[in-house]
Length: 175
Image (tube, rainbow, N blue to C red; front, top):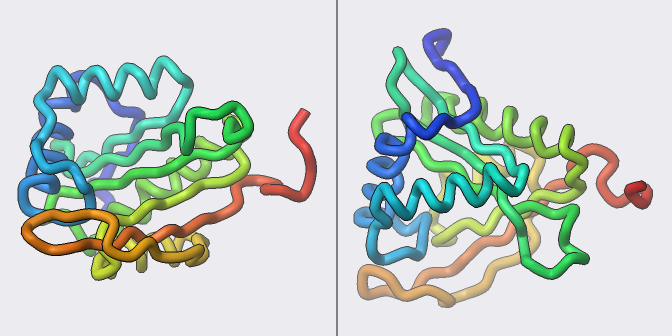
């Protein structure tokens, strides 16, 4: 995997990111969106996160975007300001190759540098063993499962909640 480059996402990456996410929406259960957002909407979301100071990374294999990961606000209320929720998506041909791990490591480090203290993963579909395994390998702990909270492809889906501390976590109060 020496041909993999992990770097901050650029707007030029967004068409490929839109395609990766669109396939996940149309064919998978990791996201509970039902209609794939278009490039304009994905650009709006990217800019909102970037303008908010949240990290957003792209994974490139031989110069082509094959995955991405970002962190965003966990909840809008101010008491949650030190907690982020992460997302990671890979093109199907790039899964199970260590790319998700590299994206997650970069994302975790960037969140720690920014002073965030907790990272939450809300994993769509409790059968999503790949995502649960990736998060476990990155130090996340299982927090719980919300059974049957999403309906997609004619079946009820769970969400799995996982969490990991960032930096000092809750061992002290941030300045």
